Length: 88
Image 1 (spheres, one colour):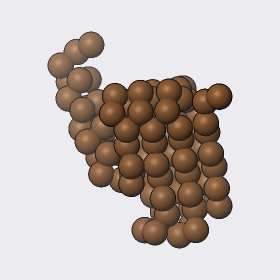
Image 2 (image 1 turned 90 degrees about the vertical axis):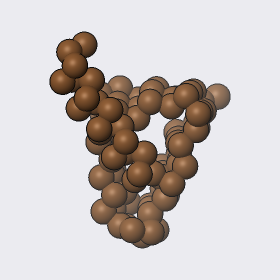
Image 3 (image 1 turned 135 degrees about the vertical axis):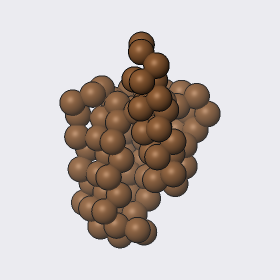
Image 4 (image 1 turned 60 degrees about the vertical axis):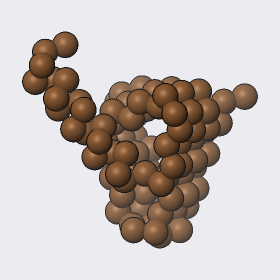
């Protein structure tokens, strides 16, 4: 991976971490986080790989992603009320 690409990835990861309410250890969050409502909640568990675009639309929106979940690039999770992705 080129140096420029690594820097861009690190910057987006730092920006994303500031936009989520809870992020577990070992989680990689390289997809876009679009927080359209200030009181919405995004919580992501441990050891996840999230390359998807995460969107929360309203203050009532609650997005919960459990431990060990992988969501690939090209995926858009657009939450108006509630989304739960849990590994069973």
